[in-house]
Image (cartoon, rainbow, N blue to C red; front, side, top):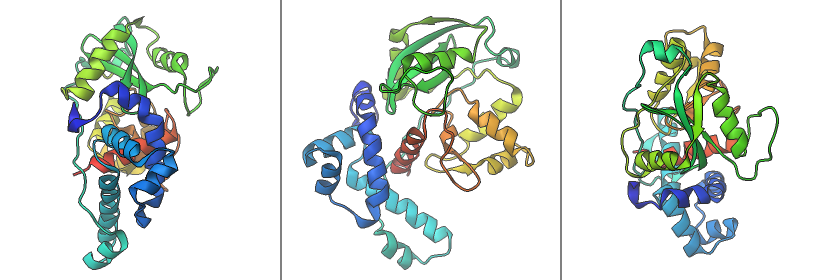
Length: 294
């Protein structure tokens, strides 16, 4: 597994508390609170907090604070601040290491991709991710879709852009491929999750969608980990500068969360909004990436 981190199922169970820790550290890092203060804010002993955070994130809370400072200093320097000013304002420390999985290949012919999964034999299963339990939809040639399950989310009719329980997360993914034959197999999903999150194997994906949508999804992969782009910038990247709204719709239709990083797309004013699997999870993904960015 990467960076000496905890087993994947342990990181999945720790996600909710670690998301809160990331939020708290993200708000307080300019004051450089010590380990005791951070642990107290999470209701844990310093030893327990240090161990759990490090095993989840792959870096210590102090290293994470340093990564935030490094990112802030870079923003200051790009805006014209001097090296001295940037250092004084952030207490700059070294960044954490980046680990980011990559897409190996698409695994579908153009005709299959445009067919939207009609007639495909797919497997739907539950398996852990660093961001909580995942709903994995797999095809014979790779990952078709990945969503997230929130244990405390109530069952609901009609989806909203916040947490989903297992039944709703599964229904969400299955509804995107109404012509496919879908069976449940948690063991197969767990094996796939272990391969890509723990063994670090290249990730094969099967992207069913229109050529325009797949073009936008590829543009998302060009955004460096820990960075963001507006929908307008993505529109320029796909040579459709007047189609920001269509680009936004394509980003929202991205079926493979995290690996195809639609969490890196922001509104023109920089707000975190309308993430399909919850704004809190989007925030956790971005700060997780920034913490590991080289």
